[in-house]
Length: 374
Ligand code: UT7
Image (cartoon, rainbow, N blue to C red; front, top):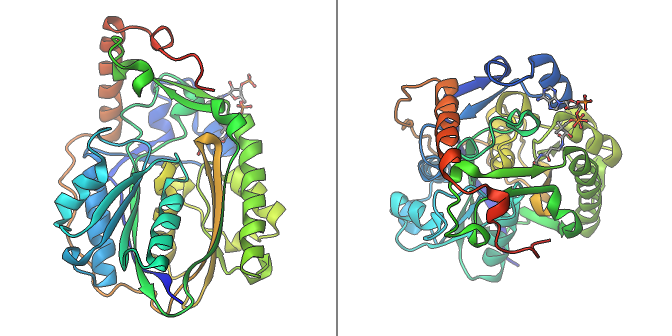
């Protein structure tokens, strides 16, 4: 039997930090509200493209695995904030890595994109379609978020994480997963203004709007992650007591605490990065995993549970058996190009662009072409 072991990991975090105090310079909000409701203190704003973040994270993960980019057979790029719609962004990463032999695909299930990508890559390795894959979770949300809406602007940040998955004869990697989608709640989180429904109608990116029902998502997210965790653990015959570490999607510390309590998982087993990076959508899980490895929290043979949810509303949970190696084979010294602006300056530039474009463009709600999108 062939398994798909995780043999490399890496993150690439943009250096510019946007604090809660920065947000309160242009929004009616404050550190007390944001921290007590979400557990967030700060988030990162990227000065480079998602492709650039993804390429460096992937290169770090490949060095960690000791795998030459020329030998990569598949790149799965999980994201809902691609630099371009066509061509796909995995192809840009393939080019930048010099991974000429690799197939390249994008997967978009919103915040669960990394984990759905991990399922895809692991399944292809287990069937023998490929022998290895680079799996990426990356988002640049700052460019299209509605910064004037305090309900959502405080929640998100940019970032990227990646792993390398390789065939193995040992029982490791994803042992079981449960994927799901509560599609009748898909209207609770929607970005309007991107896609064919809005094409050629005078809508610019500056007029994107985000529909967001935070409380509804909160309840559904906790239920979805608890159910998926129970199902995934049952599939591979383990219980909450067997789990050594939980690396959940980081949308809100209160969501994570509610999920952990209901699933019978003590918080000292849970990795939290939401305080420093906020919600990076598909990047949260691979970045939290890389952080846990860096902090020595992953041990040889650890059993790790990875629950997540996202727009759709997609949800999932994966049970992963870690291999013997918890340290990188190699580390890269390469860094992103220097960032000459503060995070607040970059956000204010996005806000100014949006304001000037809004005057010239069709309001996004009037421009939607299809009425039957659910
Ligand atoms: O990864 C997928 C995407 N993430 C999510 O879907 C997140 C899921 N939802 C959540 O995390 C939480 O529902 C939120 C953090 C979004 C909101 O927390 P909440 O405890 O559900 O707050 P709320 O929506 O009930 O708002 C409470 C109050 C409201 O005022 P009133 O109506 O009580 O007067 C809001 O207007 O807090 C107000 N509020 C804010 N106040 C200061 C909302 N946003 C802010 C803000 N600063 N940024």
